[in-house]
Image 1: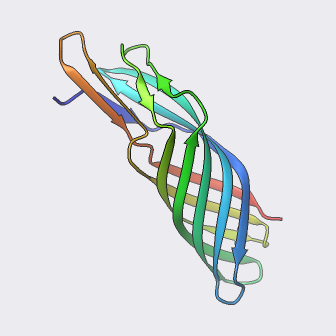
Image 2: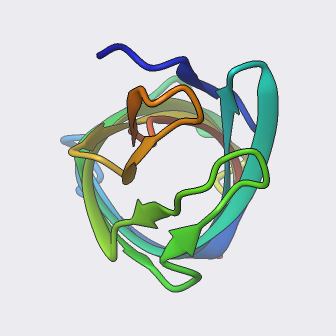
Amino acid sequence: MKANVSAKNQTGFFAGVTADVTIPLAGLGADVALLYDNKVIGVKENGEEANKTLHYIDLPINAKYTIGFSTLVSAYIATGPQFSWNIGDRNWRPANIDQDWELKKSEFSWNVGCGVTALKHVRVGYNFNIAFGKTAEMTYTDAAGKIVKGKLRNNTHQISLTYLF
């Protein structure tokens, strides 16, 4: 039976450290990061909204291709897997639902991104993180006796500002 449960966009933040390696003449390289990720998920069920802040440790590993336009500016594209571990609550019960959402302990996803590095130290980037599998799921019977099933998938748009040492 189709449920009246939907997800909505939310804003969170992430911070951490990144190791960046590039083969100078070829432009090929990789970056590996260890990040704290504060994701906010939201659901709307029968017109009522509820939000939950999720706390994750993320480990993205990206292959990268960089094109240098001058000694001052370069651009890159990157792609690779990301492993994430939920370090916060595993259950969430919105006030308008009499059943817990069960949040997964870990997630696997794929990154696709691009960006610009200026002055060899300042990088601005965009990344889209595509989740494989569910972030959370729940099943319950509502007041009218209908079975309601919900699944959340945490696809994420990320904008980053990085200072490279």
